[in-house]
Amino acid sequence: MRFVIAIVVALFGLVSYYTTTSQNPITGEKQHIRLTPDQEIALGRQLAPQMAAQLGGLSQSEAREVVKRVGAKIVSQSSASRSPYKYTFYLLADRKTVNAFALPGGQVFITEALMNVFGREDEVAGVLGHEVGHVLARHSAERLAKQQLTQNLIGAVAVGSGSYDAAQLAQLAGSLINMKYGREDELEADTLGLRLMRESGYDPRAMIAVMEKLEKASGGARQPEFSSTHPSPANRIQRIKEQLDKIPQ
Image (cartoon, rainbow, N blue to C red; front, side, top):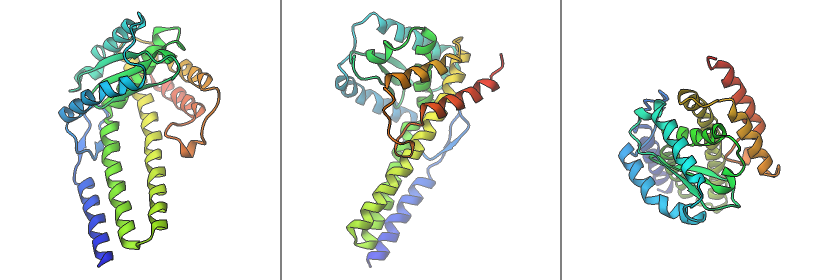
């Protein structure tokens, strides 16, 4: 009976995941996503105040106007303008945490610590373009669906084996799989960011400087790539150079 229940749990997770398919109008990719764009927007707006509070709240620095202006230009003058998302760009007051991230639906954040690393608007555009790329590719919604599938399969292993050790091993495997998806998402967001920069009139070559400065800001302290959600800066720079070679001059 335990194995029957495990099979039912696993099949339920697989069917739920693979029967929910939509085509991304920007990337052309077929994705397994349960959330609608309106649900993504609502979720992002709901989470935005909490995320801002964790990183010092909204900045009152004059640089916040730079963030808003650059972000608005990227969206209005690129293919991002054709998406259903409602973009808002925030500068956060945290001066210690070098970070930028996007919530589902178009809420985009960058910390003062990261803004202080850059000297050119093109570099700021590189970061914001990358984050808009995450939104356009619907990476958060994809990750939620994948995590739900992973949890269903881990639950099936736990029920079927009756073993705590087996469940722990399945949990570790699931985490590593989702980290791999995270690294692929970062590379895709880099590619989309380059495209958005070019379309909106920014220099996409500035993305190389962004990666070099991010690596320097990190002090070289990184986890091994296989256990990290981000690719190594060297790998990202190589991929960016390959993409730049394909961009018409």
